[in-house]
Length: 97
Length: 97
DNA sequence: TTGATAATTAGACAGACACCTAAATATAAT
DNA sequence: ATTATATTTAGGTGTCTGTCTAATTATCAA
Image (cartoon, rainbow over all chains, first blue to last red; front, side, top):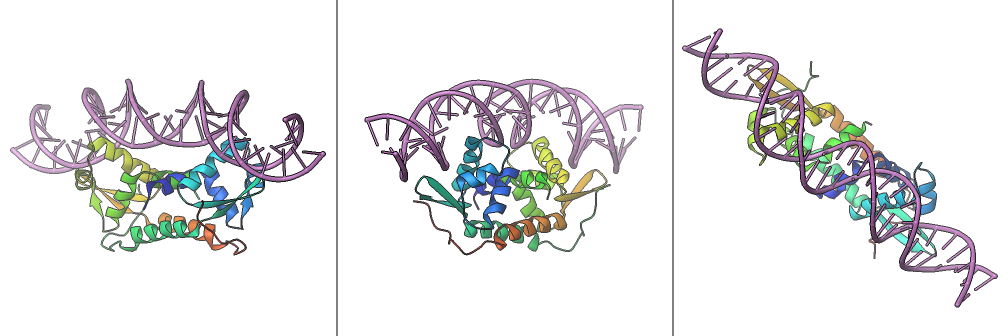
């Protein structure tokens, strides 16, 4: 499992981008409008998500469309499942004081 | 979903701690020995995981035992599931050029 | 109380990160 | 070729993060 994936998920803007892409492919401009920051900043987040292979991109004329790469998200799901799936029941988790 | 949880998962040392705790409760010293860094550094990671409520702790004499808090891990699983569970099949994901 | 052990907290510092503005690239239209 | 539009890249800056050493807290045992 690649560290870049978890680093990418650590930022709330990027998680929101992923959530929006969950409703289908969208172009960079449309997506950027949703956020209260400049286009270059959002573009930077796209680059991080792409580097982590969490999204794919495709050019159509002047626009670039982004979409989810579900297979990497599945890998994260698998990692998490393993992380707490093997827990032994010897000491039940409890709230700290 | 709390941002601290994803921030906590962004570090490989912390993910390894979670993975080890997946095999059952362990005390801080045992756990710290596994890593090639000082105890205070590992202790810092415990604090981050605790802040994110990913782990619980319990004192027994001089030692402190850590264990997974599975409910928060479940929340992460749920977030991920939602993120790619609602994807429309209008444009299949593909590799970038 | 004194000393030993387990773990954390405090403070410092280098490197990473998120944001900005300005400049560059790529495509389309005139 | 020139201009307009969509997006990224470059460069700078303040803040956050991971690590270290040194100091502190908490507990146990003489």
